[in-house]
Each structure stands twice: as C-alpha cells, then as structure tokens.
Image (cartoon, rainbow, N blue to C red; front, side, top):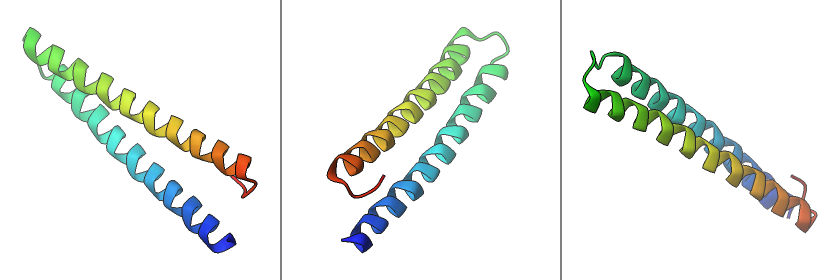
Length: 79
C-alpha cells in the first residue's frame, strides 16, 4: 500500500510541476500579446483573456492538488 501511495504522491507532484510550468508559459504569452497589441482593442482583450485563463487553470490545478491531499489524509495514507 505504501508503494501505491508513494506513486500517487509522485504523480501528483509531477503533474503539479507540469501544470505550473504550462500556466507560467501561457501567462507570459498573454502578457506578450497584451503588451504588443499597439492599441488594438481586440489584441488587448485576447491577451487579457489568455492571462485570466492561465490563472484560472492554475487555480483549478492547485485546488485539485489540495483536494487530493485532503482525500489522502482522510484515508490515512499520508498527504
């Protein structure tokens, strides 16, 4: 059971690292689009939307990680 718990924890941590990296990339991409819009309202809105979506995705991933930790603690397998 400890091996499965360790595997689950390692997969969660790897997934969190990948998700944070992807969210940081999309946040930077949205900021670049916003800053290079040159006053074009459509491009500015596109950049803002990209940044908001990146932050929302990061919030979802972080809350999923917290929820998984709570489930592990409730099952008594660590967390």
